[in-house]
Amino acid sequence: MRLTQLLSDSPRNAILIGLCFLVLLILPWLHLLPETSSFHLSAYWITLIGKIMALAMVALALDLVWGYAGILSLGHGLYFALGGYAFGMYLTRETAGTGLPDFMRFLSWTELPWYWAGTQHFWWAMALVVLVPGLVAFIFGYFAFRSKIKGVYFSIITQAMTYAAALLFFRNETGFGGNNGFTGFTTLLGYDITASSTRTLLCFTTALALLLSYLGLRYLMSQPYGRVLGAIRDSENRLQYLGYRTLWYKLSAWVLSAIIAGIAGALYVPQVGIINPGEMNPVNSIEMAVWVAAGGRGSLIGAIVGAGTINVIKTYFTVAYPEFWLLILGGLFVVVTLFLPNGIIGVLDRFKKEKE
Image 1: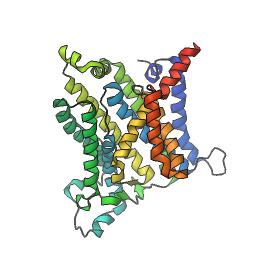
Image 2: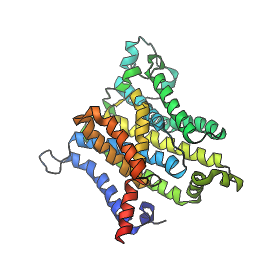
Image 3: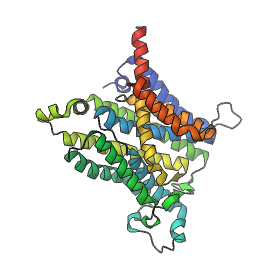
Image 4: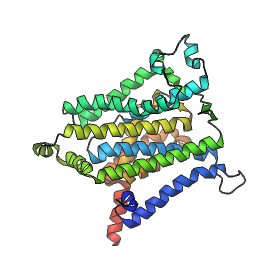
């Protein structure tokens, strides 16, 4: 399969998407230019761009299960947060050195809980970033899909699970920092986490991960596996009559989606400098669904566009008019549902067809 086909079905769109990704890969390096340079990007912009790209990865993950398999999750904030917590444990251990993390000393703990074992090692932390969201998704998905829970009932259960996890992580006894979570990170692999070079590499790594996730999912969806997921979305019963065991297709997509969301969380945490149970807030998971719906469900590039557009709007309004943000978010959801069923990408496609 050619690279242009991986980027888009249309050669013209492939060039445009390729250029956009190229810009995303180049932007982080502008932070290393002298501050007197006109092209210098400040730490604020580098952090914001990196943060939005990490959130766009979550949108990709959600589009895989919602846009292609028809499974609406309102709990992907859980997998995102689990990946963030797994990497946050490593960053916290780096900050604490050979001693206990500050919040444990405040609670008069004398030793680390067993599940913190090995978290001082970068590669074990990276393994946890993949394994923990993947395992939780496998256990939940297996029993939910095996019980044939679908539609709105499935969505409600995913949200309830996320809320329950948030309540659990709020408790100090669980050893995850309680309400404050993990913050105050100082180093990453021994390098100052606030240094320009570290910020640049984190933002570049996020852009690279976003590109690889997009290409990987595009390739996967072009294979028979992707077509089976689409058939599950359109008529799962008919597919079962044909002899397909849809449980494993749905479960594998669900686990892969959770892993991508977990990796996004791990990239997000060192750039924003904090992870706490607020990331499991049900509103966050609903926002993720709005990103995908606004960009265009079932279109991977639409998920990225939706996440980018709405987070730029959110960044402005939560600073200028914070009290109105939730109203604006709800309004966006209503507008998209009533007038933009195929999202921003659908509108662009319609204009293109009319022009032709």
